[in-house]
Structure formats: C-alpha cells, structure tokens
Image (cartoon, rainbow, N blue to C red; front, side):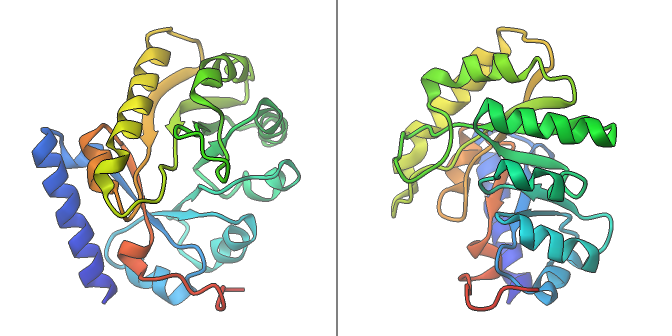
Length: 233
C-alpha cells in the first residue's frame, strides 16, 4: 500500500510541476512520519525517500538511531527552547522558527557544536489562532533580527495553510507567502537566502507547488491516517 501511495503522490507532484512549468528536481518531498512505526519508515526508505519530517522532538530522538544514517530529518513541528539541544545534532533543517528567543537558543546550541544550523521562519499566513508562526506583517523584522545570529542560516519560510476540503481555498495564502519570500529576498539581507519555501500538505500540496513551494510535507497521502495510539518508542 505504501508503495502505491508514494507512486500516486509522485505522479501528482509531476503533474503539478508540468502545469506550472517547473522542474521536478526543484521540489523536495518530505515524508511526514509522525506517529508512524519504524517499519513503515523503512518501507518508504527502500523507495528512495530520504527526507522525513517529524513534529515531536521525542520521536526524532527515538527514530534517529534506528534508521539509516543518510536520512535527512526535518523538524516541522513547534519547537520548545528547552528541547533544542536534544534535536539540533539530528536534523538537517528546522522549519518552525517563529520567535527571536527560539532562534537565539538554536544559535547557542549550534555554537556549542561548531555548526551553522539551517532554519526556516514559520509564518502564520492565515492568522489562525490555533497555529504557531509569526504574522506576515512582522516577518521581515523577525528575519532581520535573526539574521544577525552567526551560527544559524535563514534559508526561507514555512507555513501551514488552513485545513480545507477544497485546496483551491489555500491558493491565495500560498501566493501571499511566495510574495513575502520575494520581498525579503529583494532586501538582500546578509545571512538570508530565501531559497526554500516549505508549504503544502496532503490536502493541498499540488496547489502549493503551482504557487512556488520548494518543499511539500506529505504524511497521510503516503502513510495513511495517523494512529496516535501507536507511537514508536
């Protein structure tokens, strides 16, 4: 089943790229494996998927030593400052930086390891009360402040669009954050690349690609519905 699911997702990505005149190699598929057991991740790994996304620090810490070393782990969920040190040596990218204090802690821990940590700034583009992320109006100032920290590197933005039955409803939000990346890039801020736009999930990743996503985070579309009763330990 997983192989068929993945093939379907891949076909959808290809189709979205064709519709928008983009290259498939410009899109990174992140398999969102939260709550999924090791065996399912291993099955997807054998299909040449190397980018996995997790929402919880504990799950990354549990899964990291049990799976191949060439997996690229993405921290896509809300990250508490007191847990940064647990995950910073295990992930390739932190998608969910939404405050200067969090960025400052990442910088402190990265400095201890003598690494430069790639991050994305999370923007709450739809201004939903239930979601984390900085408001669009405050995003440029936050990027400018974070950019002065020397042990991290801002590579772009991330957003979580509203849950909707019709993915077209989110097109406006994807366009807004794409424009925000252009506006930030045009400022030529040191230590800011704006090369990554992480947006789009199972329900709307095709629309997200059409509007400029470079990373899409697909969980249910690959692994099926989440089972919160069975989390790997």
